[in-house]
Amino acid sequence: MVDKDRAELMTHLPALDTQATVAILTGDPNRVPLLAAAVGEPEGERSRRGYTVAQSRTPDGQPVLVCSTGIGGPSTAIAVDELMQAGVETFVRVGTCGSIQYHINAGQLVVSTGCVRDDGTSGSFLPPEYPTVPDFDLTSAIVERARRGTRPVHPGVTHCKDAYYAEAPDGFPLADHWRRRWEGMRASGVLATEMEAAALFALAMIRGKRAAGIFLTVDDTLTAEQTLAALSDAARFAVAAALAVGKAER
Ligand SMILES: O=P(O)(O)O[C@H]1O[C@H](CO)[C@@H](O)[C@H]1O
Ligand SMILES: O=c1cc[nH]c(=O)[nH]1
Image 1 (cartoon, helix red, strand yellow):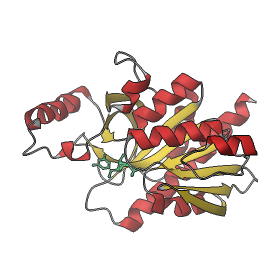
Image 2 (cartoon, rainbow, N blue to C red):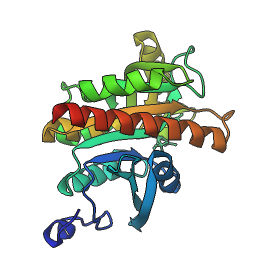
Image 3 (cartoon, rainbow, N blue to C red):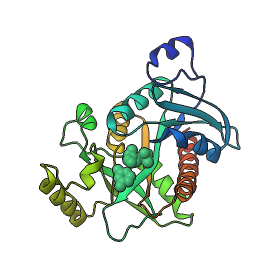
Image 4 (tube, rainbow, N blue to C red):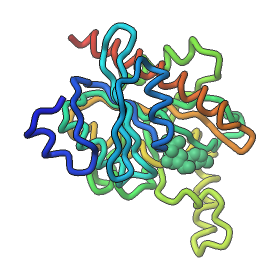
């Protein structure tokens, strides 16, 4: 990418020199090189202000970026905006989530079809009545590919929050609120909770870009190796879907 003018716009991410129009986003910077290797041939990575960005080249020569967002909406929104300024058109968040439903177990995949907006960042971009939804074609393409894999796949509404420990709210002044909230979402069929999708989907909706989210359901029974193997599969589904949808559009 980036010519000098573009590079100067990127005030938080490292300046990147890539033609990639597809980016995989994940929370943890340590995962970036592993996901870059999972989707193709890694071509180097750079870090700045806690963000790590790597470029990888798929077997058919397509450049793809893998970028960490950190945890939560604020840092995600900065990464997404700056990647858009750098020319990225399609974003897939590949990360972990916690199950809300008793039938969704650790090791299974959830594909978001929209967010319950319990985060603050998406509210900085869209009024509260607006849903934050992913791109339909991209999401369908991800679900189709993920269903060819070995793990159960659950498409549906997901929850996005700012406070990770609201999942275990004992001792918080708002503990009763959160207990009722989780029960209400379970009764309403909300599948799982994570912390970045609402900000990503909101920005993509506003800017006319494609975004989607595929999440691995985790708990403390899953090893780090199992988590990385499953996220690597999810990243491969995401890249294949993003490139196919981009090609169909052209
Ligand atoms: O696995 P990642 O992508 O970090 O995502 C999930 O894990 C973090 C919380 O542990 C939050 O960022 C949440 O959204
Ligand atoms: O339980 C979990 C796991 C990952 N991410 C979350 O937000 N919650």
